[in-house]
Length: 288
Image 1 (cartoon, one colour):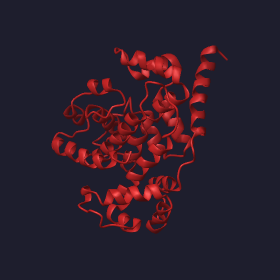
Image 2 (tube, one colour):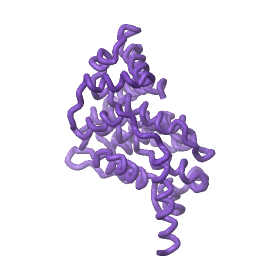
Image 3 (cartoon, one colour):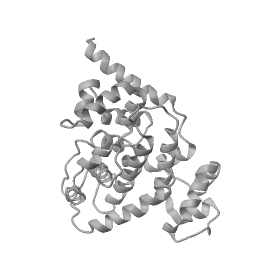
Image 4 (tube, helix red, strand yellow):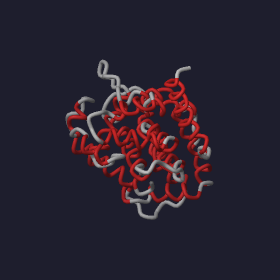
């Protein structure tokens, strides 16, 4: 085995081992991911699971009692909250909280900010979910989860390979070369490759794995149908442009929102879409 191949395998193994340092996903997360795989999810059972997690239950009640839903302190039970939010909204909200809490205590490279990462991930997720309500997309039900997890590989590199992360980051932020090119030069893999491998280990539905793998080289639309990878790529860039980037320079490099949306065939209602995003993301951001 060549030294180059040995380094590639070692870097990949080290990054994947970082997953073993994490606590297991909560029962709520597992229930919600099962719903993405189109398995039956009982509202009553889900309510019971959420109620066992005091912090999560409190956050769900705070959300449903917020101004976003026109209610102030009127809902006091998780089951009532579920009936108001619906499975989709609840799933999206709890997925965000579960993932941000999962990585809350890990040590990362010096230049990495967990706050910015969590905000970027959640903003991309909210935007992806709004986009699939506007355009036809394969596996649109997985858009929020795909947006939420699309940069998990970047985090894994920052956790497991901090020195390499700093070298990659210095070169990337200097301009003139893409993040993926920088990663390939040093690691011979990209964060998209690594993220897809992590999702495979977690048994996340295959269409989401493929979207993560391809979000920097998304599949073009075919016969009016957008690939989930293109939706995630667009949501990622829109989140950057709206100020929710992992690094400030990524926001500066993002294209105008109208140009990004045009690639998806969205040419009308751009201002309304962005206003809706700010409202929905605002309620979620306070809980991250």
